[in-house]
Image 1 (tube, rainbow, N blue to C red):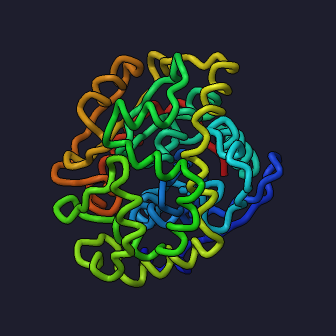
Image 2: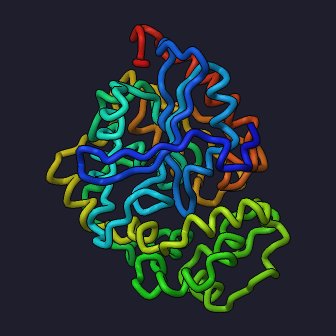
Length: 334
């Protein structure tokens, strides 16, 4: 299987019981008998199912069914116009419905970036549907006691200042007009990173339209970039809407009385690039307070895009961790 070619994967589309239609990859090993769990992989921003392209084939060949959706608003999945539709409670409802439609009672859930955050919330909203949780790049954070507006977050954590821009409605059209430059700017090796995380930096870069000057140091080939641009042809309103749900997420979690901690025996893996500024040591220390069974795995020299930068290590270490999980569940489902 050539992982670069999207046509080499098994694409499916299902209308879920939540009323939304999801596009997803569903790869099964030949002669799959359900004795190994399904791996449900969630991507982040600004990504697609395609972000897992280097892991899907190897994991399938090792006997695992791998399901990778385009998350809500991305690729060929529905894109609601109302930002509230992208709350993590809504996303988790969709994920549970997707598993239902595939007759999968439980899965190992693996999420990167926003997918990691969503996977962590899935473990709180639907704890009975997970066999384990792997969180590349973004460690677990508990539900907030108080609402923190994005403005306060950017002030308190300067490296999250870019979220001010994403939360601003004017960002949608500006990024859409510069999609290729935007992908080249964000999908970069740590050594060639251009500062954009602090408040005001990203807006200035997008408006500056840096164009082909960003090509050197980009992690994506021209062919991969073409695929990303084609899959964002509907625009970027849906993906940016995730950053516009701060208040509704807080209210849903408060109303739902979500716990701060996962179960005492719940297995969690956090693997992160040592050059990833979105995963500071303080966030890892904080995650340990709420997950007794968490296991850390440092990927030396890698930045944020660990599935690309450390593709072999991510593929091998995650599956090694999966194989260490308790295997007392019998068949997981055909």
